[in-house]
Length: 212
Ligand SMILES: N[C@@H](CCC(=O)N[C@@H](CS)C(=O)NCC(=O)O)C(=O)O
Figure 1 (tube, rainbow, N blue to C red):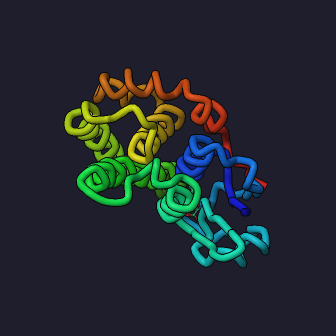
Figure 2: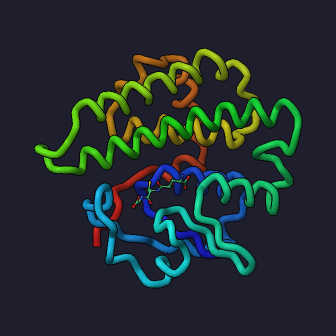
């Protein structure tokens, strides 16, 4: 299977952490993609032809298997969980599934805000909207607080997709925007400090995306 990646993308990291937790890394070829800083507001015309052919969405991650191409991290982790994980990372049915999806939706909303903020920050100073950046930052903080207040206590022993997505949201916030989020959610930060030591988190620590 071919997985299109960059080292900076938290959506890619979410998939890679799931792969490591399932112990199936040897089944994948990781294909590096390159993005100029204009990606936030302009169509990128320098993407490799195989990547462009694989995904009309032209975003990472994208997974190409012999039978299907999946162009969204949730679809990919859902596929891995079912095909290789015996539903260990996200249970198939029942209340535990809906509780996990509740967490995943909040952590994903947080990640979307972080990426939109990043795209806005990549615009020139004259074009950048401080209001928009503040709106995204407020959303990030509300999401961290909500997970700490409503969900953290019920996190179980399995580092499942709810926890993986939450940890990746904490990790990206810290890497891109600094430790400020810790003041908003100190108990979540303490939990994150523990799970950040897992091998799956360590070997997927973010680094800047190659630009060319
Ligand atoms: N909902 C998608 C989001 C994927 C996404 O936004 N990826 C970013 C990198 S973090 C990307 O490829 N951006 C390039 C672009 O928007 O042109 C997922 O979960 O996979």
